[in-house]
Structures are given as structure tokens and as C-alpha cells.
Amino acid sequence: MRIFVPIDAAARALGADEVASALEAALQDQGVGARIIRNGTRGMIWLEPLVEVERDGIRHGFGPVTPEDVPALVAALAAGGLDHPRALGPVEDLPWMRGQTRLTFARVGVTDPVSMADYQAHGGLAGLRAAIAAGPEGIIGQVMESGLRGRGGAGFPTAIKWKTVAGADGPQKYIICNADEGDSGSFADRMLMEGDPLCLIEGMAIAAIATGATQGYVYIRSEYPDAIRAMTEAIGAARRHGMLGEAMLGSRFGYDMEVRVGAGAYVCGEETSLLNSLEGKRGVVRAKPPLPALQGFLGRPTVVNNVLSLAAVPWIMEHGGAAYGALGIGRSKGTIPIQIAGNVRHGGLYEAAFGMSLGQIVMEIGGGTASGRPVKAVQVGGPLGAYIPPAHFDVPFGYEELAGKDGLLGHAGITVFDDTADALKLARFAMEFCAVESCGKCTPCRIGSIRAVETLDRIAAGDGDAIPILTDLCNTMKWGSLCALGGFAPFPVMSLLTHFPDEFTGPANARKEAAE
Image 1: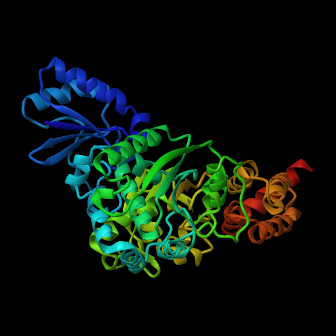
Image 2: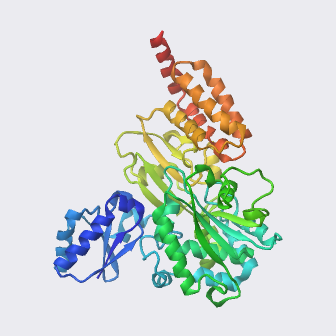
Image 3: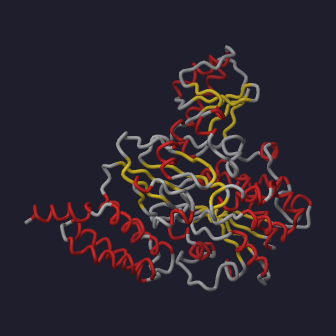
């Protein structure tokens, strides 16, 4: 009998390690033979720690489980039953799981994350073998046909970036995975690295074949110790199996990689800041051109892709670009791992094809607010994303569709707020966040964010005349900043000002009158 207990950081924060220890003790005390496997999370965070018991090839879920629940659970297993107050039934039959189209996250929560045998038993390496057979041009052709775009926020076509690096001259080319996931409400990169790190390694190896790169780095923020451990162990397993090295899987293609740990600067999620940090320099933004694809790491041609972009590639190579491109809406092709967080009943990760309405995601999948109060707005795309009120929940979840509502898809994180949230305070938080995290290189971001915080404080004190100054500052930052940190900071502020103007003028004027 196999029993699965997640080793994912979210599950561990909710007590998964204590549950695993209690299971080991109870199995021994009651003489029950079973093997405990630490897997990734299924993404249903409100049910963590989720314990799964495999019977006749079917995984039965129990959750959320506490250490106190364990003796009764083991006693039920010893009697050959599955009856328990925490019983959920077959995990794959749960509504959250049935409604998904799991491609990138197909193995997350299913396999032992660092077991090559488990990985291959669930389809691993099929994409890399197909890539070796197709060669560089064939790989780029398939990725082009898939319509895959950068999942880190920019949405740039992946195949065009790879084609540029493939055609660039240089004595050495690199594959850099941007795993500096710093957006609040975003956790898909971490979940993938902790739950299926070999998938990311396979995707990077395919990118290396496509572009002629022979060395790669995964840049992970220091706040992700579990992801760092999982990636390091998985790279070692991949080397031992011949998945990495001078002749990958016995082919003519050679590629190796390693983990590099960042120091926690939010701006290092921007690709040129990341490259500076990777080179041992201060993490500040570089001016473009030159593009990293031509002069990136150490001045050489470099692919910089997000975790989810690279992890989508093995499925594309195994099943074909056309199959991936058939999913989605408009220019948003394939699936997107949606991260639902904040004041929400069912928070977690839900992978589905682009095109669902925002209202369906928040109200049906997320279940509305955890507080039970009406939804006031959701912020899409991290701390620099726009706030979207329920009046616009009919917008399809896609790059251009959200842009049409002056929003950003970003990293596909959705943070839910109920009607008690203060729009003015949320706007101030966005600008304060930018001021704290700015690298300081360009004036609009460095000075503009500080002046915006001061201006918002004037508005909060009752100075409604400062609102035009705020909008002017936002316009300057949006169009004058060197990178997206300063350029996107106005999005949350202006969206709140647009959708909730009374909270900037009405309450402010009331405070002013009261002060007088």
C-alpha cells in the first residue's frame, strides 16, 4: 500500500510534515505495511494536508488531515476500509480536479518529484526524445505552431526568442530559467519545481537543443528553500540517468545546468536585472537594446524564459504544436496555470485552457470570498496588476482580452478582495511596493513612486486637488520607466481610481470637512 503526503511548501506550512511523522508512527504501532511517498500538491490548498491512499490503482483522498486524525485513519486502513470523517473519495473525481486540463501540471501531486523511474512511468522524457529526433529546426517549428507565449507576464512568443538565439553568433549560448517568482498571489513556479522538477529540466534541455546552448541555470529566489532542494536533487538524478551531460540520452546533443540562488530582490524577476545578478553584479535593469537573445549572460546569446514557459515544452514536443495550439482563445494558446489567492473560499492552482471568464474563475472555481461577503474586486497579475470589479467579470482570461480592460494577465495570479477593502489604501500599497523594490536606475520609477506615495497621503488627508497630480505621475511612470516595475505600478492605482472614484474623492472630502 502506498500513502502520499505532500512535501510542497504550502502543505508543509499547514502541517504536512507532522502528519507524515504521525503516519509513520501509527503504521508501525498498528503493524500496517505501507510506504509513505512525499509528493507535490494537487493544488487544493484548502484541503491541505491532503493524504492520498492508493487502492487498486485509485488514489483516495483524506483532508485536511491533522496528526490527531491519523490513528483512526490507519485503523480504518488496517481493517481494509476507507471510512473516515476526512474521507473525500477518489481524488481524480473531485470537482476541482475534473474541471482542469492538466498538461504542464499533469504529474504534480502524482509522482515522487525526484524519482526518474516515476517520472518516466508517467510519460517523462517522451518530449526530449521527440526533440532529439526533430532537431533544432523541428523543435522551433513545433513551438511556433503551438503559439506558446511567455508565461512570466510579458507574453512574448517563445519560438521567436528561441529562433533569435539559434541564429545568433557566439562561442557559448545559455538557457536561463527565471524562477524568481516574487509576485504576491503567485506560486505556480514554486509548485512546479517542488512537485515536478524533472519536467522543467526536460524543457530546458529541449530549449538547449533548439538553440545550440550547452549550459543552463535556474535562478531561484532564496525564499524558496524547498524548490532549491528539489531542483538540486532532480538535476543530480537527471545527470545520473544521462538526461543531462555531453550526450543527452545517447544523442549528439550535450547540455548541463545548475541552480543559482538570488537574494530576494523583486526587480530581479526582470530578465536583465536577473542577468546582472547571475553575473555577480548588482541587480539593476539594463537598457535594451542589446536584447538578451543577442547579448545576454556574459554578453553571449541567451534564452531567458519563465518556469511555466519551459515546463510546457515537453508536452508540446510529445503531442505536437497543433494539439497545444488548438486550446485557448485568440492569440492566447494552450493552458494557463491559474493561481487563486486572497480572500477566497477555494484558493489554489487550477490549470485550464485560456478563455474562461474571470467571473467563472472567481465565483465558480474559487467559490467566492472566504468571508462570505460580496467580491469588491480582484487583482490580476500580481502586485502591479490592475483591479477588476465584478462589473467586468465577463472578460475572458487571455492576454489581449484583459488588456482590453486595461488589465494585465501577468503571471496569472488572481487575488480576491471583498467589499471591506479600502481602495485608497490598496493604491498606496502598490506605489509603496514599487518605491521599496525599485532598483533605482531610472528617475520615473525611483522618484515617481515616492512622490506618488506622498500624493496618495495628501489625498487620504482630504486634498482632492492632488488627484490630477497622481494621474500625471502615473502617466510619467507608465511611459518613462526603464522596465515593467515602474511601468506597471500605475495599473493598480489607475484601475482603483477608475472603478472606485468615490473612495478617493468622497471619503477624502469628508475627512477634510471633519478636520476643518
